[in-house]
Structure formats: C-alpha cells, structure tokens
Length: 115
Length: 113
Image 1: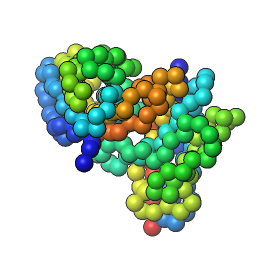
Image 2 (image 1 turned 45 degrees about the horizontal axis):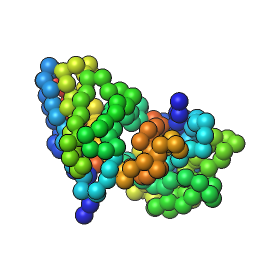
Image 3 (image 1 turned 30 degrees about the vertical axis):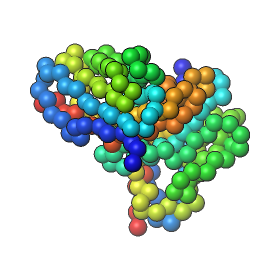
C-alpha cells in the first residue's frame, strides 16, 4: 500500500530565510505527487503537483519541489519565506493506475515564521 | 465562482445522535470525496464517489454513510455507531480518474458533547 512520511511535525523559520519541507513516499509504480497548504480552520489548497516529465516542478506562491526517484522523496522548497507562508503543509501521493481517487496524505508539517 | 460549499461550518451534537454534513459543488466534477482530519494524523479517506449512484468505502468508513443522488451533492452522515466522531471533515472533488487535482471545501468541524 502507498504511504507518505513527513518527518518534521513542526518547523520554525525566520522571515526571509530559505525553507525545505521533507516528504518521503512509498509506492511501487510511478506516483502522482502533490503538495497542499492549509490555513487554520480552512480547506486545502494545491501548491504544486508532479505527474511526469521534469522532476523539478514550480508551484504557486514561489514554491517548488523536486522529485527524486532514487530517494523516494518529493521535498518542497522556497528560497525566501514570508510571514503569510505560516500554515500547515501536506504531501500526498496518488495511484497512477486510477488517478487520485485513492490519494494518501502525510501527517503534515506545521510551519511557523518568526520576524 | 465555482467551488465546493460545506455546511454547517460548526456543528455540535449529543452522543447517540446522527448528523449529516452537506457538500455541494458547482464545478461539474464527476468525483467527490470525504476526508476526516485529526491533529497529528493528516487526512484519512472516509468515502468516495466517482459517479452518481455509486460510491466506495475509504480507509475509515465504519460509522459513516453517504449518498450520491446528484452529481453536485455528496452528503455525509455521521452515525451513532462512529465511536469518536469529533473531528474536522473535509469534502473534495475532482474532474475524475486520471490524476486530476482535488479541490477542497472549507471544512466542517463536528464536536460531540
């Protein structure tokens, strides 16, 4: 069965500093990979997705992620964080045979930004 | 604007009562989903539906029921059989199979008193 691990429960970063959120997945075939962001008490918004092709994908709000098959990772990065980036971030993997109706989410990483 | 509407935003119920959460979408999406979110556990799939009048159990379907009588609506009933129903519930939709992106509603928070 597919699974997603986000090893960092909580990360604190200074405003303007760079950010990397880790995501490792377990899946036998080529996965569909996603990063979502959630503000408190709200739904999830898609930041970016990887289906195939270029392993470095660009998303909204200046985020990017790199798919590394050899490491089973899909880490999220941002070169300079803003206070508005404080939120919870979820990595997710979908089955490539059936689309994303069986999307599996990680447990999330909560990001705190300090001035 | 197209999107997903969940209601109510907050709901309180007594133990032993059934409660129904509403989810309506005007995106013309074929597939709809219900997830449950608990602190530290991420999102877990309760039920999903890929077409009207058909739905499948997710990973934690026990104590829940759904219906899909219309393309735009996918209500979730939390029954008295659900042992720990206090949680944040998220509805989502997608255009269908084929690695489509999920669009989420704003969620409903259920508290059992």
